[in-house]
Image: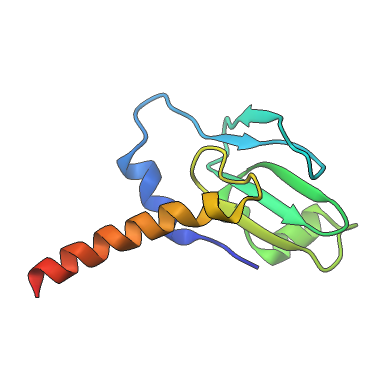
Length: 113
């Protein structure tokens, strides 16, 4: 499974007061429905026999809790992310913010050397 903790900084640095996270919200592969998260701070994409995309609390993004929440899904894979519509299922959308952050961090480190 994948749990992307590096994106936590996005909520601290980029979100203004009153802004909320938007996630895809559906139970199938062709997902176009979106939802504005109210109390949740992450987006979930869970894949097994079917695909679940929804808002979730980041603290609940672990295999044990998800196994309880989705008992009929066996052998699932999941990812949690914290940017708008990041649970689309497109790997590029999920990895791009990580690569940008990594590139910026390496640039800062390189300038100190």
